[in-house]
Image (tube, rainbow, N blue to C red):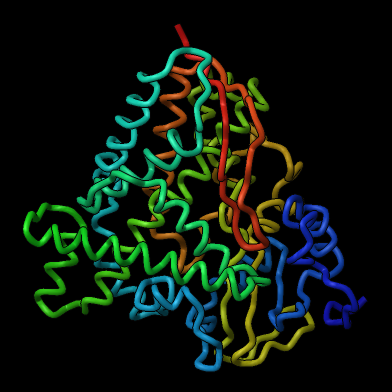
Length: 399
């Protein structure tokens, strides 16, 4: 069968709820039979690890939407690293990178650790807790706010707004999804602007202050500052909280793995790496070709859109034997998962995300005997992203 052979049915049915809930059987078929195919929306879809890691980081692929692509709600962040190619992307990223060195990240993550201890101090053993909100979202948001030197309170509306913005990234987003995402961005940006106005009368020494100074010096526009800070502030509790909550749910369902994490400190990095591999919050990335490209037997033309399925690459059995299993013996450096993306657009927040997850899990190992699921786990999933809405858990504390 030719890889470019015409397909009469969707290989990855973006709007099928069974697919959204459990896409892995579809990924397996796609990797085997259609590693590159053209979907109904015109994008070329790639699912194999080898192809994703080879092609997604090519300099000839652009993250910038061509002029003919309709501007959606995410145009609200069009002046951030999410929508810029090098050298503009490199210059913008350089302005924030120095705030996320390992030494400073440990400082920011400490704020999240303090919040987790505060939450655990406030409950009795066996008490039910909304774990996603209080052990995932809150600590991660507070840690990012520590880096920005912005208030870290009232974070629940922030994460709910982020859920609405992410829905607009789906391949099958509706007009209502786009409208809701636009309103969510209006809320996030409006709230951020109020905090920046207050900061000018009460400055600090965080990343927000540094970017305001660059605006005053003429190096950045107001839009660049507002959008960049909105990105950091609004997303700071989003992806890291998903990783923490996925770990809590996994530990609840697999208490043996939690006990291994507690007892075998030399395996902790491998367990965290496996959890990142198995449970990425963002399932795909998209790029546009700027020059002709051949992938397998398919000719890609300038302007064509390519979609790389990170979630499928992370479970490619050619790279990760027993791909659906958390394998504590899998060497962390044997093959890198692509959860944080790759190339120049790899997630800028991955250093602080990893630090926050490690800090949270280490506290759990120290203070929690076991996690017990005590209600329905509610997710907000699409073909593009995953997020927890509710993770009710009984926390059994260690004596």
